[in-house]
Each structure stands twice: as C-alpha cells, then as structure tokens.
Length: 357
Image 1 (cartoon, rainbow, N blue to C red):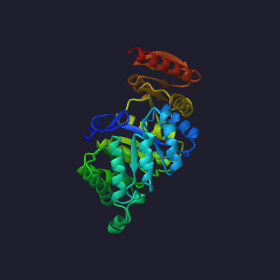
Image 2 (cartoon, rainbow, N blue to C red; image 1 turned 60 degrees about the vertical axis):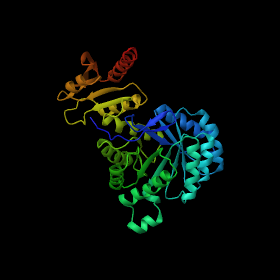
Image 3 (tube, rainbow, N blue to C red; image 1 turned 45 degrees about the horizontal axis):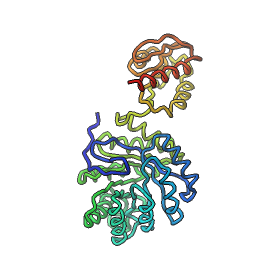
Image 4 (cartoon, one colour; image 1 turned 45 degrees about the vertical axis):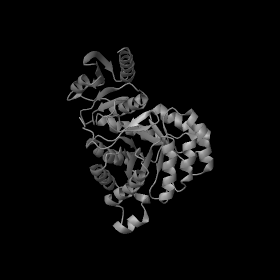
C-alpha cells in the first residue's frame, strides 16, 4: 500500500486536489480552442474516457471568447493554459475557468503575475505554477548552465514567493521535463520543502509506446514514493489514450479503482491457444467498462488456474479450450472460439452484481 505524502487541499471546480483525496487524471484538448464544435467533441470523448480535469489552451482573444460556450457544456473542471499573454488569464477567469495554469518561464514580471493573482483571488480560483524544463527563465539557465532540479525548484519558489506576498495560497505546482531523471529529481527536491499539491507529468514524452513507458516510469516511481496528487500522461497521440494510460498507472499501484485490470501471461512454448488475439480483443472490448474488476487471461496450467481463481473472473486455457472462473468458482469448460463471448457474459454478470451491491 502506497503511503501518500499529506499535501495542502486545493479546490478545483467540484474536485479537491491534495490531502487524502483521490489522485486525479488530467488531459488536454488538441483542437483549436476557437473551434468550439471540435473542442466540445474532444471534451465529450475525454469525459467519456473518465478524464477528471481538462486543460484547454488560451493563446489569444478568439480562444478566450470561446471559453464561455465551452465551459457551459463541460461536466469536469476546466483549466485555462496560459503562456506569454497574461491578459488571457484575466479573460479566462471571466469566462468561467476553474483553474489557471501559468508558466513562470514566459508569463512575465511580478506586475503581470500580481494582476493574475488579484483576478483569481477575487474569483476564489487556484493557479498551477507550471514549471517546464524547456522554458525555464534565462537567468536560471545562465546560473545553473542547463536545466537542473535546483533550477526547476527555484523557478517554482520565485512564483510561490510572489503568491505569498499577495496573501495567495491556493497553489498547485508542476515541475515537468522530458528527461525522466530530471523530472523525478525536481519533484522529489520540491517535495522535501513544500507541501503544495503536485501535478505530475513527463512533458513531451513522445509517441504512444515510448511515451507511455517514460510516463509510467517517471510518474509511477514518484507515486510509489507517495508524491503526487494529480497526473497527466503527455503523448503524441489521441488525448483519450493519455487518460487510459493514466488510469493504468494508478491501478497498477492500487491508487485507482476504475475499469478493468487485465492479468495475462506473457506466453511461452506451452501455449495451446491464440492468446495474443484473445487478449488484444478483450482489451479493446473492455476499455470503456467503468466497473472496477480484474480479469485473468491465462494460457496454460502452470499459473492459469491460480490466477483465474484469485481474480474477479477469468479463463485458464489448456489445449484449444479453457475453464471459466467467476469469483473463484469454476464455471465450466469452453472452447477457444467461445471464450470471448463467454467472458463478456461473465463481465456483464459482474457489473450487474456490483450494481446490486
């Protein structure tokens, strides 16, 4: 069981980030914000996938104007992503954003930050101080020579200090880098001194396969150490995939109970069925199931019966057929061709039983 570090509680829309509250999964839209129809379609898909907070870029006035309509149709908190033009943060507050993300490396000087703080404070909104290794302040790069954990934390500290000067403490912090070691070191160093809730992420992680691995390592190691209150997996892919990977990371550490966890053997020469095909089809069919459950897809008699017995439901294959298990009970033998359909029936039964409970 992961023992999480206790952090401050910060309200974002109807959610509370930090403290003992559940770790949330975030993503970001990829559409042009001024294209309201396209943006809302993507928002709907993200919400359906279980995304709990959605960030939307606000680079210009047309985007800020569009937030009014977008916010009205959203069912989860909206975070306005602000770079360079601090006035867009002011506009986003008026449009109904639930949180403002600022980048210390490009938001501008103290006076600009002060205006943003006065605006969010008046609306009782939080901010995220979003430090990024790729856009650190020039003087910090000159001081440290290149992005280091110390430089990242110093960047965050500067803006925390500005917040404190204006009696503002509703702060969430992120210290993202594409380098996994730098990212982990930055969060760990920050966590030694501060108790602000942390938004974890490996920025610009890359395409789905490599990006998911990098994110799982960086985010997963920190979460296992009790660090982190909200996460985003940044992939060069459909943002819905970010949400799926995010929940898989949380589930693997026992930090979330959403949807299906699949246990499947890695396969070897003892395999007598096409488990690759079965596992792939089941993963695709189960990705939108929201009821927490563990499903075992096992290929032989070595570990199969044991794993299938100890999960909520599953199948342990032999030669061309397998035994179905439901809550530890052997439900009989089925052929390889019948397996997927019979497993789907058991999943429906489990969902029904869960609802009745």
